[in-house]
Length: 339
Image 1 (cartoon, rainbow, N blue to C red):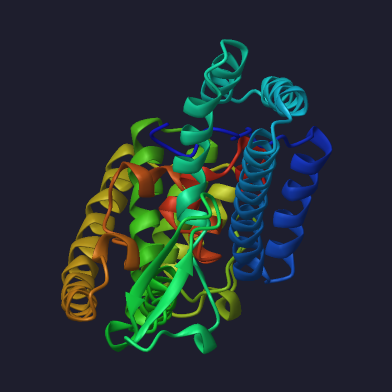
Image 2: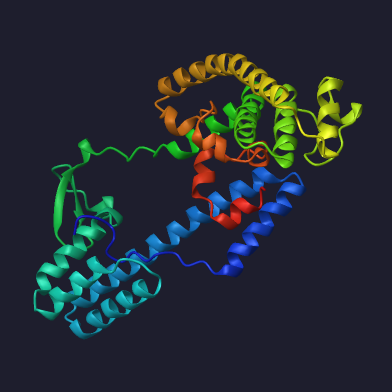
């Protein structure tokens, strides 16, 4: 058995749970708690994976123990129950069914070897108390699966080093990077460029509103203008009056003339190009730091420079610190909360 699919089952999520996540995301956005919502999604998925792994290990160990005591009937029953559960949840039961076939054909020893191979990484050797160290400076260890006892030199013993939580290090590094003002502002500008280009390709009254709004956010990522609401001097921040006047006109139904629309596109690209240069310097500096810290930059950093993935993410998701990786894993219901 080459991998850990032996007792794997696909997760099942009800429509009610999905709907609840959608409402949770929308509510979190309204309340300004977007980052906590995204973090909760990631933690929940991690916990689900841990629970499924624990269930796999428990069933495999129980099956092994039953076979080791000669209880073939109960072992086969457990295997069959697990196969039925995996099928109900839409998983692939082929590895588990293979163990069942071995038992049915009398190849019990082969099945136990398969189970031991699966369990070995999760069943570390058991050390017999140090009081039983021999005069030769050795102590005995017992394999919990086979019961085999071997000796090792105490002098050569090294305590297992504390495992480095690389995932946490990368996550913390990414949070530090995303918190930089240059990074936060550029992420909004990059998303804004995608909206400007997409709206210009298919002109419409609604498209003109989105185009001008995205352009305004590119000019001032920290402005508090909300799409669909009239802009005022107080809400528009540093956005020139001529720009937010055109936005208000678009809300009233005035279409952009083709040359004006193209001018917005050209100016948006210039704003993006200038911001991308500054972002590139920051990204390169943090990329070097990540490498020197033995972190994978592709996982520790998010490159917000304009691409297809960035174009598909709505501005509201970018503002709530949703990364392209998280966006790609979201269901349609979860994404709808950001529209």
